[in-house]
Image (cartoon, rainbow, N blue to C red):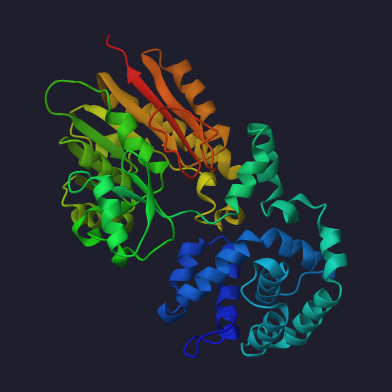
Length: 441
């Protein structure tokens, strides 16, 4: 790959890649770590980081073959980043010799790694000499093969014994860019024509979803600033229609979108209904994103900064006809969009987050009117955050009926995984959906 004349040198980008990866391995989210990178460098650094995270398991296994003891954290982050970028020549933006040269240059030019520059050089050059032998030695390691933590792989094997390999393969692919057409403003077929006129192409999946053939900046999307479309994965677009379609209560509806940030599902609910929508978000900064997203659409929910489980702090006593609970979860279904997640999560997180989900379900269910609905969803592929929650909820709430629901949508093209009629037929993230109806007394 040849860099443009104005592009920052690769060694400088690799320094930032190492810093970001050290932060992630210390428990910071990739998104937060990347925000600290200078804006002029961030795009290139993010692209490199995403590649590194998709191959981090292999990189760590190779480093373990090269040295008995890991070097200091920053040097280790730089070495493993270089190995992740260089190990597969068919999937690398740079040739291996360039990566070695620039990685060593990156080490020499920062105080944290200057003393390890020769060590990094020796490790990487040994890798080039013994590539095939070293790769063969790591092929039997499932972490290296699948680039996910060992516990994550084991859980998928248990939860999805027939599909676990396809799920892991999908998690390492690039996700498509999918749009949600605001049908208050324009119809999907008409919007496809607008895309074509703008030099873009896409395909209509179903309902409001259009998948772009190639990703594009939102500024290039016709009518984006005027709220004609939003960027939202096809699986996430299932939520609002599943909750509202077929519901026929008379009078004005009240809808609660609990855990609402960044507001994609809030906006979709308002596009589909004229209901009063209350959007809750515990994080004030993230709540601002709800406002900015719905304002672009020309819609007005009531946004409240509060913990959904602390009902007395925000509830005015009026029940809701519909509740959307997009609960905090491991985000194991959106790894292809956020490849750092797999390395951030710990096995203990699953049980802790599942407990939070159970608490929110039990807390919000009394707020639903008789005959009303609650949609529980997570962007998770773990059964502890899906099917297991449903069974426990039904066992403890005899007034709840499970309506036809997609259940687990696995992160792969769904042509061979039909569920409900409105399931998108495109390539989507992993999600879970369960729709409950409250029986009248």
